[in-house]
Image 1 (tube, one colour):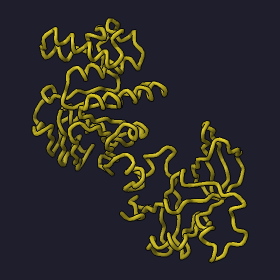
Image 2 (cartoon, one colour; image 1 turned 90 degrees about the vertical axis):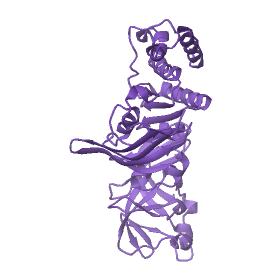
Image 3 (cartoon, one colour; image 1 turned 180 degrees about the horizontal axis):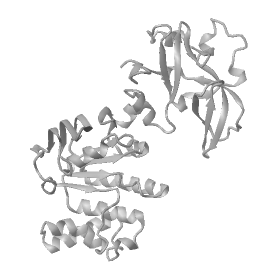
Image 4 (cartoon, one colour; image 1 turned 135 degrees about the horizontal axis):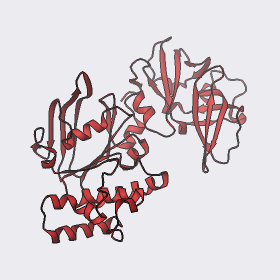
Length: 376
C-alpha cells in the first residue's frame, strides 16, 4: 500500500486540454472520490495514475517512486473498469486468479488467495461459473475480486456501479465501503453520482472542465462549498439558486424583497444595485403558516418577517417519509426545491409562503460563480 501524489499534472490531446494543474496527495489507506459532470477530466486523471494515459507535464508519485515513465504493468495498481472486463471463456476462479497467474505466482498460493477473496465477496459458491451465468452485481464483485487478489498498492475504480440497478447499487456500495475498511488499501474512485461520492469518500475532489474546484471531506464540501458549481453539484435535491439584486433592506428576488435581520445583515457588506445569486438548500426552507406570518410587518418585527417568499406549487413528488415540492416565484422562471414532511398534502397551483433560514444563505458572484458569502 502507498500514498499517491500528483504535482501540477496536465494532459493535452492535440489542442484540447483535458486536465490542468491537478495537484493533490492521497495518504496511504484513504478512500478518495473524484466527482464531477461528464467531461470534467476525472477518468483522465484515473487513467493517468494507472499508466493508460501519459501526462503531458507534471509529476506523479506512487509511494516514493516517480512513475511518469514506468509502464502500467509495473506500477502495482489494480483497476476496475465500468464494464468489468471479465474474460467470458474463464470461470470465476480463473478470472480472479488471472493477474496472479500472469505474474507466475505459485499455483497453491493462487488457489489459496482466490478462495480467501471469493469468501470475502460471497463468491465461493460461484467459482465454477462463467461470467454469462452471473448477475450484474456478481460480475462486479468478480472484477473487484480480481483486483483484490493481486494485493496492489492502489485500487483504481472507474464508475464500477453504473451498470447496476438502483437497489443493487446501494447494496454493492455498502459492500465496497466495508471491504475498504477491512483491507485498508489506498483507493481512488471515479463517479458522476454525488450520492456515491458523499457516502464512500474520506475526501472528495470536485472537478469541472479539467480543473479542481474543491477538495475536502463530504460534510465540509456540502456545508461550505467553494463556488456555485460545487454547491449545486453536491446535494440531492440540489441547492436552490435565486438571481437577486441587493437593496438597502435586503435582496430583490423577482420583485419580492427578501428582508435581512440586523444580526444577519452585519455579515453582508454588499453594494446596492449589484446582482448576485443567492443559494439555499431545500432543508433550510420551510412552509410558513398563516399563524406565523405578521399581519402588518414593521421595522420592529422585521426579524420575524425576514426570509419570506411567496411561491406557487408546480409539482409534488411524494417519496414516503418526505415529499419534494417544486415551486416557482410568480412571474418568474425560477423554480425552488423544497423538502417537507411526507404527511403534508399539497397540490399544483397551491400558493405558499416560504420561510428561508438566512443563517444558511450563500451569496455567489453570477459571473464567476465564486462564493462571496459567507466568508471563510
